[in-house]
Image (tube, rainbow, N blue to C red):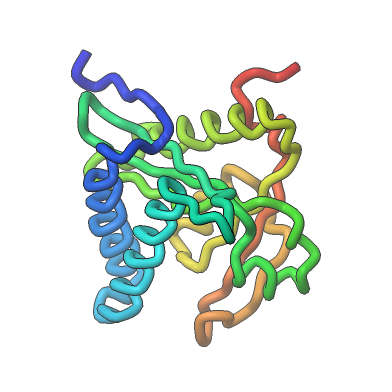
Length: 188
């Protein structure tokens, strides 16, 4: 039974495990893209995700946290993360602000050593099921990583928008708009 994965909301005791997933997975994603030398960008991305985790657990009053995280755990080890919150700057820019009202599925990271085992899909289904419970009907997501874009095109179809050369020559940024009911575990 040691390979059983559970999915649960973020708790304070899981912060360090979630950080480890970000540090390992984000560094790995940049390296796979041939961008492993962009140490400052990698650090900025990791710090941004850590800040999101912190605000999800400790919302301050002026900005009630609309961000929430789910974690995939194997025994007591965090092996994957996913978040939902207001859509980010890249999505707003790439869609001419057409999706500003749609929340974003983000922070989908799975430790490299357990990728390809359905953990990412399980996180997406768990998140969609939670969104359905909250009566949210759509979500969007975006990616500038070419490897992830191929996976998302297989899973979500053609992107809603693609910003050509957004990150430089030959590196596009893609945005998808999805219906929650297509991914929720329970369909009414």
